[in-house]
Length: 102
Image (cartoon, rainbow, N blue to C red; front, side, top):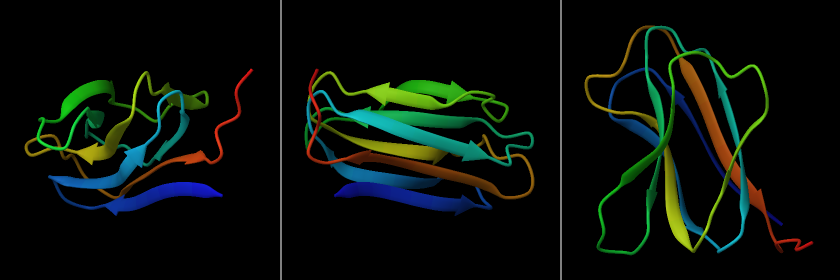
């Protein structure tokens, strides 16, 4: 079973969110169409916590991107207020469940 979220972003303060990511999950990240924007990946480590930026991109990645969740969290990826350029940026995050361990 896969858990994922996708957004086609055409304005600032727009995110795709996965509300629960289990510990040790390897989250796949897909980003395309960045044009003058900054895309950020943020994690929230508990229900009442604030979002913390984990990674950012100002150009489309040239290689596969991922994030290894060191503990259970919520994740969102998108463009914050003041960071939107032009066009449409498409973002996707997701992981497969059950988690495969080595």
